[in-house]
Length: 528
Image (cartoon, rainbow, N blue to C red; front, side):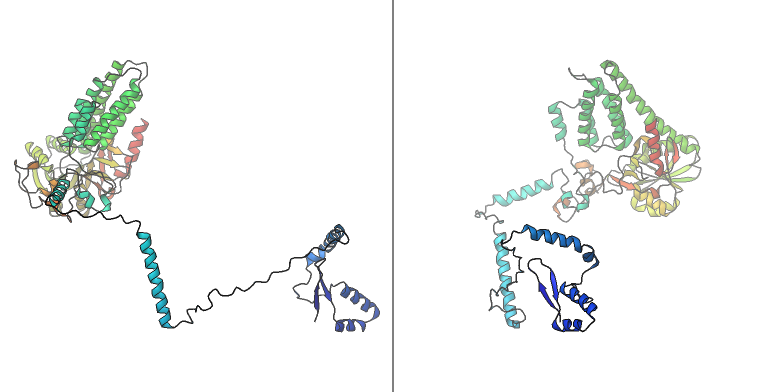
């Protein structure tokens, strides 16, 4: 076999032919023998497949590498110590730290069990040491007296009798993001002390809180008429302009109204319109002229966007023969535009019957029933649980709306979606009457839990006959003490969402349109 010799000076690998190989070379012809001897002396003979066989790149750059090595040799002065090459370090085997310790395979079953028990005990001790600083030292117990339990029971009763909707704290996380219901007059008292809210706005907030003014159109008209008084009494402070200070003054009035009750979509549209008109005024215009123009603008908004829109809805609906003789029309609760449509149809001589569907706790359908019977319309009054039995008699359903969103869904008082869904299952067409200023593109609510408004839960508990001796005008019912039952939660939501697939068309002042075309109407009005 060939022997390998490492030249420490040049780090080249030389191959020295063995005696057998030299003897074989001598037997060859003189010319061939000299050639092979030179090759053997130059250490360039390697067996095919050897890992140290020169590659093509080694042959290509052999001359350059030889010159580089020669230059390195010349730099080394004669007699200087030769550079030592780093010899490979051998890995020293570390002796086992604990030679007496056995491995898991060397242990018996009993020894393994004992080891596991010790490890569990050590882990439990470490866990107790970590938790020990977190625990607060217990205070020494005081002798119990008769007053402590009484105070605890008193605080418990006060917390449950609080006007805030404490039941929401016991409800699921699905409703935890909604604002709690509260019916108190603290914000009215604070606003009176601060003097930043107009007295007319204070009165309006009290009426809205007590639900003396309800409905999207009614609340919007009442707010705009109140703002006319606010603008008329407004005086621009020195050093500021009307355009900036009046906008802030109106915002303070709006903040107060939102504390009484959440603003309706109609109110938000009117507020945006009013603030936009304020900012359009020139700085040079006198304050008296600006206030007069604002009051006229408010009157035009009420007449064009509400009153004229309602009349156009009636004309479009009746002009397209959507109501015919012999129809049985189902309506829900109370809607001013729905009532106006039915009253106009009665004046034009149409003969039809109305089914008024109502729901607790406000029973607004009773007012609708009284108004319709006064003008001679034959009516049937039912509650929501009887809809499946009566829907077969109806030929069409006409509903009001609080707002129509860009995805075609309709938000209205709770119970509207039940009526629309029952009509959809019975293949009864559903038509929604809504003014275009109630169309909303600011937010799309996929269900009734994304946003909603809580009502008073006590109105759900009081289900007995009417009486003037109890709160809310009702006698105490079987759920009168529902707050004392920890596992019982009463949730009174004011609105629900009706999906677009349950609605056949929407009647507005622009005509009869599918509910999904609301966004085009909004863009059309913004461009004008």
